[in-house]
Each structure stands twice: as structure tokens, then as C-alpha cells.
Amino acid sequence: MRVLVSDGIEKIGSEMLKNAGLEVVEQKLTPEELLAEINKYDAIIVRSATKVTKEVIDAGTNLKCIARGGVGLDNIDVAYAKSKGIPVLNTPGASSISVAELAIAHMFALSRFLHLSNTEMKQGKWPKKEYSKGIELTGKTVGIIGFGNIGKEVAKRCLGLFMNVVAYDPFVTTTDLNVKLVSMDELLASSDFITLHIPFIKEDGPTITAKEFDKMKDGVILIDCARGKVVVEKDLLAALNSGKVAKAALDVFEVEPPTEAQAELINHQNVSVTPHIGASTMEAQDRVGEEIAGKVINTLKS
Image 1 (cartoon, helix red, strand yellow):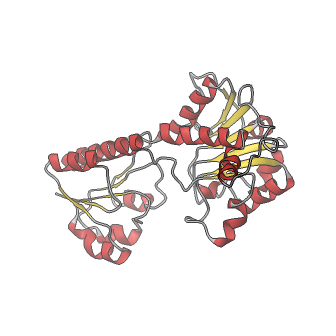
Image 2 (cartoon, rainbow, N blue to C red; image 1 turned 120 degrees about the vertical axis):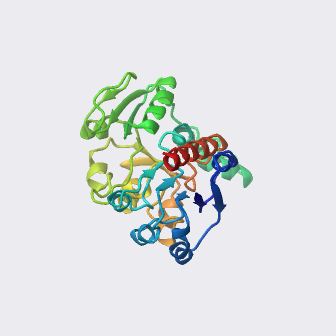
């Protein structure tokens, strides 16, 4: 059986596939090439770049599974694949620690002006007075929206920093962590920091809009290491400019790579940004490769 790896895979995953007797082709294909070639493969493994559309699924007459090395499935027509009896696999837990650590890193960066002072000192400045009013995380309330694998890893680290942790997730009713599960409105009203760890569901639309910003505490700090479209960027920019949101950190954006239309938000002095690297650690990528390879092997061999 043949497996197409279109967006790359860590060596450990590639070796697992080959050791299982599978023919592995690691090749980046254009959308047109993918449509023409997909019928030659029993499985396809993608990351975020390759789009597995309805047309690709129809063309993949031999497909036995579609695998995504990562959490989100935005680039795969999951419903259509399932309607055709093709399982869609992903690795929801493999990168949880890495994403959680990046969210915490952004909290520290914003709390102590690291995103600004690092650049200014390299320009020969000494902004000691300007950045003398940082804040501690200890004792602050952090609200976690989305209490799945990543949200729980964030909670563990926030508890270790002696923060008060509240969480909202409509699918979670109990937890063994020292976390208070609350309504969305209570979380918005009580949190000093809000961090998002949820998927973007097109049918539901964004989670954080002007309406939600109005319910937040004045001076809240917002962290989004989930999906860009869960936050309406123009509403976030307005909240930053009004002071309702004191600072924000973004690892994800409505359009990636960002366009000139997003420059004002990205260059805002109270915004810390990273280029969608939440899962991009060596440890996470090894876990992703190993986990997705194992799932593909099990599926093809069953």
C-alpha cells in the first residue's frame, strides 16, 4: 500500500511507515497535481498546507484514510470524507504541551514588556523607566476558553504560577484540577488574562467579537494560540485602541501569512506576535510524526 506525505513528516514517523511495509512518497503537490495523482494512494498525510477537498476525496478512489499531523482539521472536508466511509485521523494531544508553553510565554512577554524592550535595547535604547510598571502573574485570574488537551496543559502551568484558574467549555462538566468551571459570561467578566484553545467552527462563526469584548474587564490581556478566526481582528484592534483590552498576543491570524490589511494590529505596540508556531517544537513534531504514523498503520492494516 502507498502513502502520500504531502507536507512533510518527522523522520521517526517516516521510518515507522516504511518499517510497516508501506511505500512512502514524500512529495509536495500542487492542487492540480494532487487531483491527478491521489488515486494512486491508499492514504494521505497532510499538515496545514495541503487542502483535502471534496474534489480530492472523490478523485482518491483508493483512499482508506486521510491523516492530519496536528490538531485542527480546517483543511480537510471531514464531513464529506466520513460520508464516503473514509476515516479522518489527527493528533489532538501530541502538541498540547508546546502550544500551552507558548501561551504562557506570551503572558510573560506582555506582562513584562519583553516584546518591546528586546527590540529597543538592540537599537541602543535603555527603556528602564518606560517598562518599570510590569505586572506579576501570581494572584491574577486566567480564564481558559476551551478545556481540552491544550487548555488543561495551560491550566496546570498557570496553577504552578499560583494563578486563579477558571475555564469555560460546553463539553466539560467536571475536572480533577483546581479549576473552577464557569459560564462564558462569568469568565469574561472575572478574568485578568483570557487564553483561547478552541477550534474555529465555520457554522458558529467567531467566538470573540465586539459583544464579548464589552463583557470583559477593563485592561484584560487576551492570548490567542488557537485559530485566527475565533477572534474578530477588527474588533480586537478597536478594543486595544480604546483600552478595554490592555494587551494581546497572537500566534494565529484571520489570514495567514498576514496581509497589509492586518499590519495595524500586528504592529500595535501592545500586541505580541508569533508566526503560528504553537506546535513547532522538536519534541512536539516527533510526537506528531510518531502518533500519526501509528494511526495510519493501524488503519491500513485493519
